[in-house]
Every structure is written in structure tokens, then in C-alpha cells.
Length: 349
Image 1 (cartoon, rainbow, N blue to C red):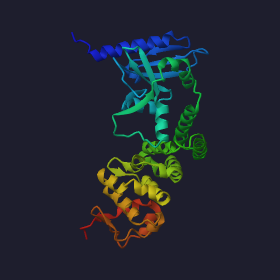
Image 2: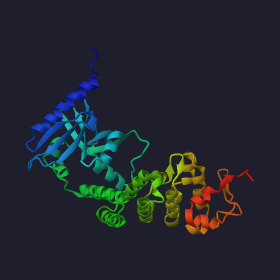
Image 3: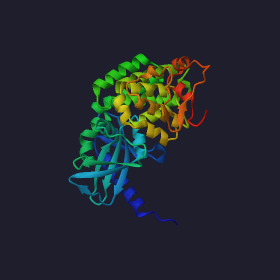
Image 4: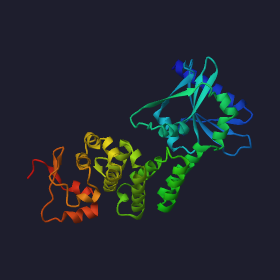
């Protein structure tokens, strides 16, 4: 018969101990969840009855949890960060010291927003994330006070999360006026994280895929995207731009329009992202060509390329529009993607 590893025994003991602490508290009840639910357990606030004021809980137990300068190290796996990003309930990561019967907590959505406000983005390449938490943030103190406010949705973080959730719905239902008002509210409520609205619209643009161009819902989403790029473009990341432009092994025409707006309105920031190098690396040399073209022409704007890019060459590509094609008409209809349609290898004649 297979024996359980020591780490499994420690995890199970920590799980049982935390669940007992929650259950014995007069204002909380606990529920175990299986793996299909994504996290280990739930805690529901019962101070004013059972009203669905729920926390999602994920446990990490060690025999001993080291401290450093009065802080506890949390190593959070990517899957829990992604779960917290989409979950409508607060997700609480609980670090358990089994030998001392102590536990500390981290509210993942709050941590993510604060990291964003400090300019620290959640990298798409990391498998886990490190957070250092004050050792005063014990589970027992949280159950008595702070976590009650979290469960009851009292506080600025809950306001921001609610606005972002509403923004998702506004974008998905093609309501540009509502989206505009929500972005304004979000900017007032949390100016340091308001650029998250760009990612909300980008996610919807990716979902629409090919329907983004030539459909009413696609047009509405595209227009929302352009407005947000003008507003928050100076805080877009390489990851944002990649999501906007890249579609598998190809590119989005709407995304290229957005890229043109980014260079128009936030040129210095766009240059700092080193986008030509990025798109070469992801094997989209045509997009890299357009980025390099914009960098090489800092005084030119979107419509200054109506007659084409001239003799500019990059990554072995050059522009070659047949003489019987009126390129200005193509560009007026297609935007920057028209340039990419007529790129050929430098060596070709």
C-alpha cells in the first residue's frame, strides 16, 4: 500500500487545524472544497446571518515557517494568482506553521492591485510569485477584524474590483457610453490601477478574434480600445501590446491600428518597450517592421504613411506596392496593416 509523503501529512494536518480555528470562531463557518473547486476551502461570515459573504481559501503548510525582519514569505503558485484574477469572491492565501500552530494570510486580489499600483506587473512567464507579509497579519487577528470587512465587501479594493467587473460586462455587451463612464469612475476611484481597464478591453478583443473587424460588437470594442490607448497608453506593457496585436502566428488589423495610436500619442513610452525586438523574437517580422518604421520616423504620425513607408527596410523586408494599386486608398481603409500587406523580401525584385 502506498504511503503518504511527509509533506502530504503536514498539509493535511495544517488544513484540519485551520478549518477548526475558523469553525470555532463565533462569527464564521467553514466548508471544505475538493480539487474541482480550484481552492481548498471556504469561510463564510455569519455575523449577520448566512448572507453569502464568502472567502475562498488556499492553504500552504510547513512544519516551520521562517521569519525575516518581522515578515513572512509567501510563495504563491501562478494557478492561484490566475484563479484570483477571475474569481468574484476574495481569495485568501493562508501560510501555516504547523509546529507553532500559527497562520498568516494574504488577500490575493488586494496584493495584485497594490503591485500594479507600484508598477510591478504580474509576469506571464513566472510560475510563482513572492510576497512578504507583516507577521502581525495572523489568521486569528484577521478573523476578528480585517477579514470580516473583506468578506462584507467594505473598502477601496472591493470598489475597484466591482468597477472592473462592471467594465467587463460593459465591454461584453457593447455599451461604449457605459464603458466610458465606468473608466471615468475607475480613474477617480483608483488612478494608479485604472490602466487595468485596457486589459479588460483587450481580453474582450482577443475573445472576439476575427469578429473584431466588420461586426457591430467588434467595432464597439475597437473604439473602446482606441480611447483607452490614448488615455492609458503610457502605462501599457509589452505584454499588453502583444495581446493587442498578436493572433497566433498572425496579427490583428485592429491591433495594428491600436499600435499606430500608441506611437502617435505615447511615442517615447512605445519606444521604451523595444517592440521591434519583441516582435522579431515572437516571429512576427512584419509587425516588427512597422514598429521599427515608427521608431525611425519620430516626427511622423499615423496618416503620414498614407503614401507608404518609402525605401525603409528592416529584418530583410521592404515595401513594394504594385504601380497599378492606389496605396493611399488601401491605407485609408486598412490602416497600418496595408503596409504589411505589401512587404516583400529585400532581395526580391
